[in-house]
Length: 305
Length: 305
View (cartoon, one colour):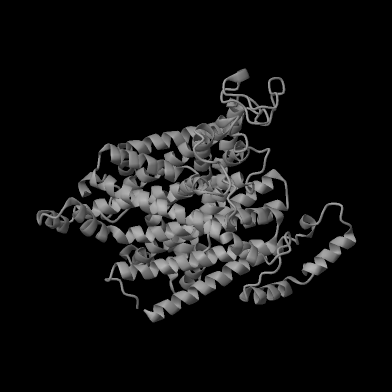
C-alpha cells in the first residue's frame, strides 16, 4: 500500500491519510461505469449550459403553422422528438428543462452540504450540549416524511407569488433547508474520531483557534464521504424536484422542467406517448449516471469501505 | 427494555409535537386562506365575516393555542371546503391507502427479497443480471414516471388493467406495482449484498458439508444471519411508502389519504392538511419504533439498556 502512494509532503502515514489526487484518479479510471457516468453528466451539463445556443427552437414557441391542436409526432415538421400538447418543440423544452433541473439540484445540494457539514462538524468537534441540540433537531427533521412537508411548504410559500425566479429560489431553499440531517450525521461521525487523532491534538497544542482546527485540519480529512454523499444527493434532488413539479408544486409552467413536462403528458398519454417517455428518460439516464459516478468515487476515494 | 421503550415513546411524542407545530406555523405565517377559499366576487364584508368565523383574524399565538388544545383531543376542526370534521375526512381515506400500501409492501416482500436471494445464489447468471438491471432502473426512475410507463404499456397498449380509479383487484395491480417498484429495487440490492457477505462464511461451508439441502442452507443458515439489515430497510421502506402513496394515488386517481393531501394543499384547506400530516407523521414514528423493537426479536444479541 505504502509503495503505491506517490510521495507528497502532506502524506505522513499512507494508511490513514486521504489518498493523493493521482491515486484517486487512477482508481477512478478503472471503474468503467463510473467513467461513463461521469462523461454523461458532463455532456448533460454542457447541454444545460449551452441550451440557448444549440436549441432547435424557442422552448415556449408554439408552432402554429403545423400544430392543429394535437401534439406532433417525433420527426413531423422538423420536430426531432415531436411537440407537446401545446405545439412546443419537445427537444427544446428538454434542453431548457435540463438547465432548470440541474441548476436546482446543484444549488440545493451546495446548500444542503454546507449546512450539514457545518452543523455536523461543530456537533462532532464540541460534543456536549451543542451536540445534543443539533442531534435532537436532526432526529426531528429526519422523523418527518419529507415529501408531504415539502408539498405543504412549496404550495404555501411559492403559491404567494407567481414570479418564476422566486419560485425557483424557494424550491432550492426548501429542499436544501430540509435535507441536510443525513449529511450532518455523516460529518459528525467523521469528526468524532478525527478530533481524537494526534494531528488534531498537535494543531491544538500549537495554539490554533477552534475554527482553524475544524476547517483547515479536520475537514480536509473528512471530505471523501462528503463528496460521495454530495454526488448521490444530486440524484436525489433531481428526482425530488421533478416529483414536486410533476404534482404541480415545483417549477411552474411555462418554464420547462423535466418534472412539469410530465404533468400534462399523463392526460395525453394515449395520443402522445413520446411526451411521457422522453422527459422521464432524461431523468432516468441522468440519475443512473450520477449513481454510477458516486459508486466510482466511493471506490476511488476510500477503497476500504 | 422498559426504560428504552419509555425514552423512545417520549422521543416519538416530541417529534409529533414538532411536526404539528412546524406545519401550523408555516401554514399560517404566509397569510390566511380567505382569499383562496372565497369566490372571487365575494365582497370585503363577506371576506371579513369568513375570516372572523374561522378565527383567522385572531393573533397567531391564540390561533396556535386553540389549535394545539383541540389537536390533543384529535379534533383538528372542520374542513374549510367540505364542512366536515377534518380528521374524520382523512381517516375515512385511510383504508384505501392501507390497501394500496399493504399490497405494495407485499410485492416488496415477495419479489424483492426472493429475487435478491436468487441473485446472490446464482451470481453472473441471467437471473442475476436481470434482477440487477431492474433494480437499477427502479432506483433511478421517479415513481410517477414508472406509473406513467406502466399505464402506457399495460393500460393503453395491452389493455390488461384499468389506468385509474378503485374497484376490483385489477385496479390495484398497476398502482401497487408502481408504489412498490422503488422499494423492491432497493430490497433486491440489499438482500443480494447481505446474502453474498454471509455466503462466504465458514459456518455456511459447514452447513453444506453436513449435507443439508441447498434450500435449508440458503434460508436457514444464510437468510437467518443476513436478515437484520433487510428488516431495518423494510421498516424504512414502509415509511417511504407513505410518501410514495402521495405520488401514486395522484397518478392513478386512487381515493386515498395521499390524493386528499394533494387536493387539500391546492385548496389551502388547512385543517385537512394538518390532519394528513399528523396521521403520516404518527404512522412514520410508530413504524420506526416497531422496527427498533423487532431487532431484539430477530437478533437476541441486541439488548436495550
